[in-house]
Length: 402
Image 1 (cartoon, rainbow, N blue to C red):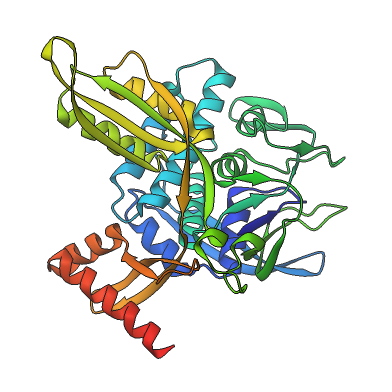
Image 2 (cartoon, helix red, strand yellow):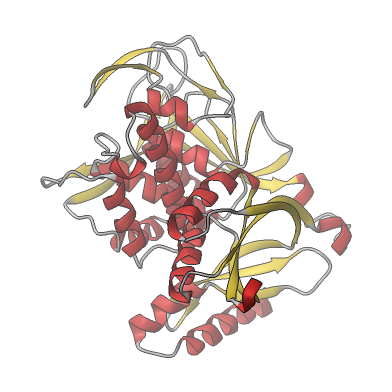
């Protein structure tokens, strides 16, 4: 579990700084950002003091003139970035989608026509993408504290706007917030869309065992609080596999999910495959097609998408956009999930992430991450099965040594 303790608010750069301070490797961010089609910038970070507390400060410095970017062009950049894992790409796309819908509502325009200004700048694109990479690297359940929203006004590309910024408020729909009594912008649009995309729960300090702490510093100084975002990584009480009871019944977890389905008889398999790919990139947990026969003997397929309940409306809109269906049915389902962790192993083909199911009285089950194996196979010109085998040998070797 990762807890975001945001008593002083949060922004994209503060989130990245805090996760770096927590221990996410700088190399992981650099590798992930390398394939995103943006250049002319450099990353800088340093240690700073805020109210005598030492934290990490993260800064994106733009070195060359950059083109204006709208929502469509940012999505294209992320979809084309082979350096991003599926999880990082899906989270970044989800954050930008939340922001695009907010901006579209603020300016009364279609989502695809949204033109970002401050958030479309290189530093904001890098902040959101780098944060998505870092969250994906940690692979933790994220819980966030209620957010303080300052008051007053600020100047933007659209002129003077109230605080909290209109897009920030819309991004935080359903999120608990409060008035900290400070005339300042404590939560930025980049911070708001990221936390709305990644946090599964908002509330006070959770029941968990803290293990690591990171502090991310904002740029400004506040008179009544340190401008720091504190992130705490630990083991949730219900997921603590060091307890004696490690039976399957004791350690399995259930999550509330929804299945979206449509029977379609007028769409090619290629279009269906693309729709499923888009759904997975936008946060679906699974997606599949089933061949069926419909009335009058017509061949057809059932398109199914499994997702979190809170993602249902967003993914339904995507399916209506990408397929020919005029209606979707949905029904709730429970899913039993094995506890898991991510281990990074060293192979002759570079570092490979391995997903490990564990902690429920059954044998550990390891599976190398497909995207990491694919990239290594392409880079070294070897069959992907060799990379898979090398990753599994490295994992088994490490377990033997331990």
